[in-house]
Image (cartoon, rainbow, N blue to C red; front, side, top):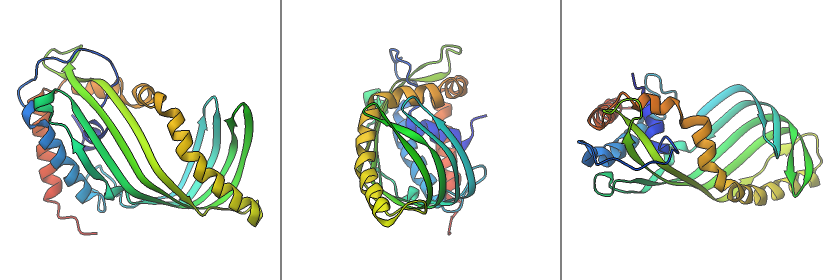
Length: 259
């Protein structure tokens, strides 16, 4: 059974980065883009309240969360407490191609401002120009991301395991960030070091995002989209997918969420 949270992933991100030749448009394709548009707006309306298996997302509040991120050029181990992320429900759909006409589902999403508040303890390093810079922080977090933009596209093809089912192909994703504001406070540092770090990270984050763009598609493909999502779509025709999206959107729209 396809869950609402899994369908949101399909709608927002596209699903798989497997390259293939799309099939002839299936029945129901002409309703796909409008169905997804209504789905996203209905999802936006229930984000402050949650619905069923969808938790409250506006804001996201986490009392305690541990993390361990290890990459070749970056390692961070620690925890965050009393984390609050707000502004996710302010997203705007700047554009969306008509899949029924073009055979490609292209999208352009913008988050004008995402605010992060909380506390964090972090140990690790980041590799900058061949030098490993240590990270050791005990922070009060006050950060804001401005104009976070997600531009991408995908197409549908027949499932490899079920000829009447679907899979997503030719997935592409690019992420842009216009600016960052930081007023974090590391209790292990003095005033000058805190001010310097905030200024440095403010410059570093957009540059780092630019550097990783070539790997964004592959990272999403390898870690999130395959094989779970395509296994899900293998049992769904385009008509069934559109019907599910429309039905779920109507349920959310009727929820009358009033935070």
